[in-house]
Amino acid sequence: MAGRILVLNTGSSSIKYELIDVETRERPARGLIERIGEATGRLTHRTRDQPPYVRDQPFPGHGEGLDAMMEAFAAAGPDLDPVAVGHRVVHGGTRFTEAVLIDDEVITAIDELAPLAPLHNPVNLTGIKVARKTFPNVPQVAVFDTAFHRTLPPEAYTYAVPRDWRERLGVRRFGFHGTSCAYVSRRAAAFLGRDLAGLNLIVLHLGNGASASAISGGRSVDTSMGMTPLEGLVMGTRSGDVDPALAGYLARMDGIDAQQVEHALTHQSGLLALTGSRDMREARGRDDDVARLALEIYTRRIRKYVGAYYALLGQVDAIVFTGGVGEHDTATRAAALAGLDRLGITVDPALNEAGPAGERAVSPPGAEVSVLVIPTNEEWEIARQALSIIS
Image (tube, rainbow, N blue to C red; front, side, top):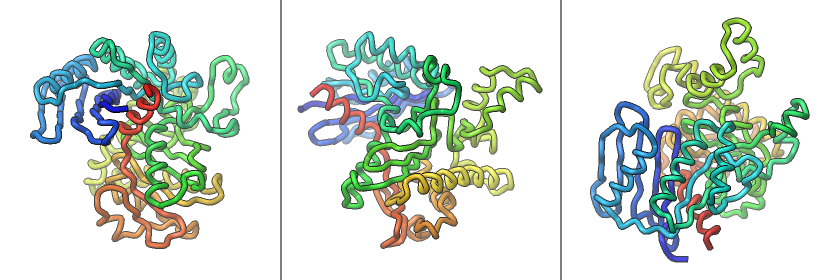
């Protein structure tokens, strides 16, 4: 099917967008709107043949950001006439296990799932509503981060909590970063020249949000994020794993209610709580005990999950780093896998430090377990799934 697909990846404080030609895989335009809701914001719109079109201004909400995106296309091109709009939606619950064509019923269902992803589903819906108004006759497709993890077995997704919680309230593990995992798993198989159906992978998506996933034969069998994107690894502002009794303790000792605890664990924890900044680059740029401890906590948690998933899979063909930190932070890759030589997992210092951009191996040639860096492309994966729906 010929034509271009507009992909909207609406995050909690940003909007990434790409216009993708489905035949050539070229990107005639792409852009990023940053710091939505802050005093200063920036829109950067890139096309193939022109200098970047940049606007520095506040964007009070996502609606204003999407309006500015439309103005950027009008001012800097190219013509925006998509055959479909693909939307990233973080949480699909148990209802959405694959991409779907968006209608009013789907919008209602996504809204009902907002309590499971309060940072993401509401802003994902904003993107959907604005796009439907802007392109009333263009098919809109929702691609869900949780859908890839639909293959989790019951022993992986079931929490040991009261049956009523599980059956009536739907308490279970869902997993996230599935769009990224789907893309990098296929690319890892292609890089290795292997059939994905015969590979066991551990995918480490490390960015402001971070997760580890165990993937066997292209199917997710375990993942670190749980019912919400809060569980698991240490992240930019999210704590990852903590004792569930923490909420009760804080309520008894300091009168802090559950909503306050959830807010603090989601917005005020992680690297931000440990270093004062959620940006890994700032932590790496410091030379003090506070930053060193934070980085050891961060990488130790990753190493623990790698060991657990190695045991779960029994045999691992490759460990895949992706996401902003995973792709660019050489020190994190080295520290996260340090001491795992007896498992066949080693990082070659020269390859790790000097590797070119793009897909590459950072393990020694002939290593028992390949360590790969595979840049993710969630936008292309969204476009691919949107195309499969409209076709």
